Image (cartoon, rainbow, N blue to C red; front, side):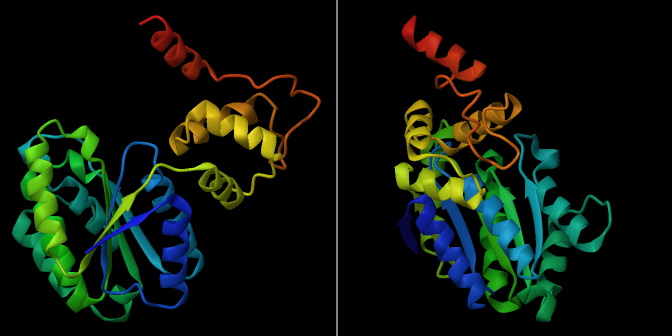
Length: 253
């Protein structure tokens, strides 16, 4: 099952599901290009769910060899169980199969960057999502198809995922200026619209770049400790160093 969201729609969607206790037993795959808000949305969901008293366990997948292909799942289970173990596939499935009841219904598992997994590890996400419907836990993952060179692999995986009744595929659109405003309000920034417009133009709507730029402006004192623009230090819209390098490379091509 698929839906198309922008950043603010996705955030509001999950707020509603968590507030109304309608998220248990469901799985989600967040898809979109780099900087379109998948990770930022996950960060917000994690924070909001914890505020509502839910348990959130999160792990990131890294490009690895066959021996470490279940590393992210083991990390989730180590957080859940308070252990430090490496388990094989059968053991991982066994533990998730027996994780049920009220605690499961109040638990979210998050996997970041499953595009970096090899195919058997991605397929394990699909299988564990099937278990989530029966056991009540919530499984979420992000997937950046840009980072996989073999697009046939992407198509095959998505064909499998979209056939699953219990996995919602949320396709992210490129953020617009209202998404940027929404993101800044979530982070409790109080910035004039002129500054937000410049930030949007500088980053081309890329939320990841915006996060970096905001940190830079805070370090420089351009944005103060109250998350407001410090007019005394703000003479022009400065470009953070990495942006300057990136722009210079574009201009010199």
